[in-house]
Structure formats: structure tokens, C-alpha cells
Image (tube, rainbow over all chains, first blue to last red; front, side, top):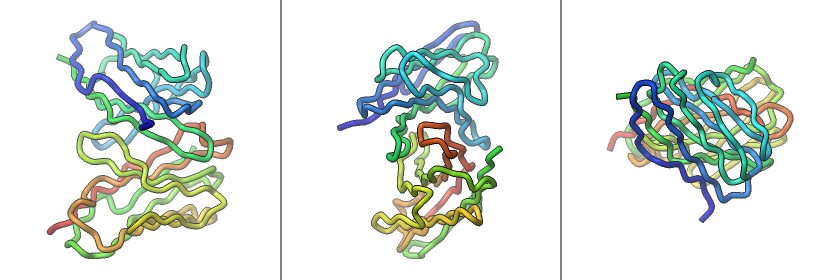
Length: 111
Length: 114
């Protein structure tokens, strides 16, 4: 079945550490996205990519980095510059006329 | 800047009741509108996608309508069941294709009581 796979489901980060969240899709979608979800704040866009080797900042890109070397993959790195990284992270992909498909999410906690 | 508002923020109904969730958006220049469901601690599941040229979409007990001129969409759930309990989110994408960033509402938390 086609879909989006996010891993890991749960991730713990120590202060000053960089961590990478994985997102893989087999839907052949051109565009991919990373959103952050905090209680009471809704979903906020971190980065998005419309084609391979190209990506744009969303509304809250500071402290995050991404790459898009393959169409299927869009990993997100949460760097030590992100001061409040504890949140639920959602990856999505889209194709014109078909809307968005989301992964099951990664819950990141700072310890 | 597009803003999406969902009313009510929370809704509790007895099983079997028909209900309506509301979504409004400030900029009518949208490409499409999508309704999602989110269970606690899970990702978003797409329910219905309405293209800007369409007025409504139906899937099973769900019916979503779109009125671009007034900036409103409604999600109608018929004969609600306890399994419908979840947070429902609407999101719009701007003109220029669906490969652009969505703007989400904050959602409506629905509880269906047995």
C-alpha cells in the first residue's frame, strides 16, 4: 500500500544535541512538507519542498534543517539552535488534484 | 494572510445524532479545501477533498460543502457513532496548485457519547 512512513515514533533529545526525523513516501508525490503540532496552537509549517534538490522555509524554520536528495525522502534535522523542540512532528506529501497525505508522526521530547 | 477558523472548538453529542462542523476562511482565492480527522497521538487522516470548482463531496456518512464566496465550509456527519470521536481539522490551499502550503484551522474536538 502507498503511504508515508515516519520514524521513529518517539525520540528523546538531550540538550545541545542534533536529531534527525525520517520521512519516506512511496506515493510518487512531488511535494513534501514538515509540520509541527503543539497543544492549542494547531499545525505550523516548518519546511516544504516542491521538487528534488529544492526546499523553502515555512513559518517556523529557525532551528531546523532539511534536505531533499531523493523524491521519496525528506528528512528533518532538529538542531541545538531550536530552543523548544518538544512537539509532535508530522510529515506530509501532496500531488496536484489529490490533496495531502500525512504520516503517523514523531513525538520528540527533550530530556 | 489566510486565516482559518473552526467553530465550535469542542462538541459533545449523543450517539445517533446528526451534526455539523463549521470552517471559515478569510481569503476566497483557494485552490481546494480538505477535511482531516486526527485521533489522539496519531497523524492526520484525509476525509474529503473539495476542489475550488466543486460545491460538495460525499463519502459514506460524511458530506462536506464549500461556499467560496462566503468563505465557508461545513462537514456534516450523519448518524454519529462513538468511533467518530476525534479532532476534525479543515485546511485550505492557495491558488497556484495543491503543491503549496496548507493553512489549517485549530480543529473541532468531537466526542460522541454511547
